[in-house]
Length: 402
Image 1 (tube, helix red, strand yellow):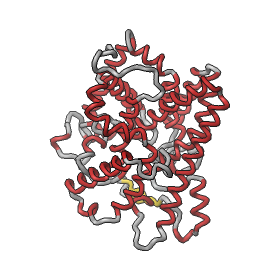
Image 2 (cartoon, one colour; image 1 turned 120 degrees about the horizontal axis):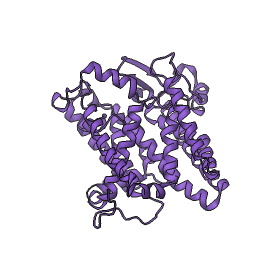
Image 3 (spheres, one colour; image 1 turned 180 degrees about the horizontal axis):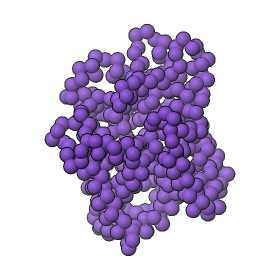
Image 4 (tube, helix red, strand yellow; image 1 turned 180 degrees about the vertical axis):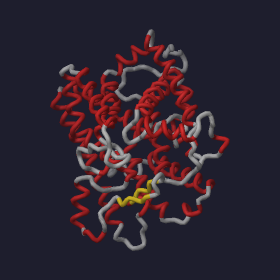
């Protein structure tokens, strides 16, 4: 595939900031937000695994890795490992402070009688029909809340991926850059795969829960570090060697891989449209695969928490496909959607922070209780519009990190 279409292609100017990645992140974030506002709406026809057997989390973590590889990789090459390490730990500390602040804010709001915090203090498992508490009991006292918050062992499940980022930044990323500086790339990627495969093949004493959870933090139930390090590490390496990868994909085998990625992505779209999930209208589903067969394949190869191999392949193929399309047809996509998506993509941590409080606000109104498709769609649209306006007006940018 010829990336350099004259009038429509992305301008390759060797800038550290890649607007294609901001665009992709800006597309993913709204879908992630509406999935946290757990009301079925029109947005779910895109966000609930409709364009592949992947969630927004896989793309989001991959994008985070790529951006880290680009930005901090440049600092590593220019200023050396010590300066890079200092910047990484500074960012990790910032993420940790934000995470603990969110945890404690919600934790203390539980003591306000007229505020219902259920939406952000419990997790409902739709498959088992079980509600899990995400905080210590209010009867356990303030010190139990403080200790759990400091160790990231409680908090809103809608924010727990930030806990994963804290650990990745503080513990994993310095090791990645040290190995990149020493040119131990094969060893780095090999170790990453060994850890992933150990987790994937290990029997679980509790169904759908990783047996190895190194940190004991709450995020490891949804994003076990031993599994999710794989997409992050490969993302960092891809960002670090971005120029070399782009050159590879411009011709020969790289071109063939892009067309294969399109084909694989299309096949996964056909596959996921067979999902028997009852919320979707029958006209939006295929019946090429029986519900029993689909659920068996999904359970064995597409589990989200352990990033099953099918989900992993789908993530890589879809990412390559979207990036290739944006590279070749950047100008029309940017003119049509860039003004909406890029600001959101460039303020992702801010959006994450804000959406927790908006979720709490909306859940304390009667509107979600109507369980109406059109009301739900309106809620999602208004929330996303409000967040976009807040980003564009830089509301509280002085105090909330981006």
